[in-house]
Image (cartoon, rainbow, N blue to C red; front, side, top):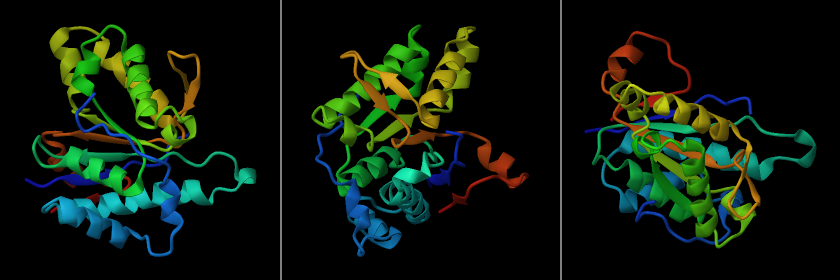
Length: 224
């Protein structure tokens, strides 16, 4: 089963896969690093999903390249995030984890369904960002250039409907705020700015392919 990778348009502004890393996102400044080299690296660890790898490589490269080349007088950059569409077991988490290892940036995962089952969505999201900081060994600067993978993002609406509550909608609003880029206060009273954190969302999105075939979507999509 293929993964469909989609780069979201710029916005206005707990897992065993979590791992420790050291500073290194500036490696994208190296001349030899291109979307093609990223794809080749992914090929060493992830079997198949060729088109998804290409789309994801371009999106991730563009994200970090914009950060690395941003001049202080340019202000904030337009925020971009990524959507991976595919059923469980197709390698979405592995792709994200492998990318973070190549770039040497901290990486954590979160489950949208679990977030929707709590009454304190903001606290759960803050906890995920705290774990990102922990993976960066407490270095705020490195954490602010990390990757957060939010799986089963498509389940938020279904969880909301099934439970007959607004929990799913509350999580959506909380996630949109941090994905657009905003400072979040952590438990140690420090703030982490999410403006340069790359958020990659994943989900099955059953029926989405048929909808997209009838519309002119934004961004780009790859099908393998």
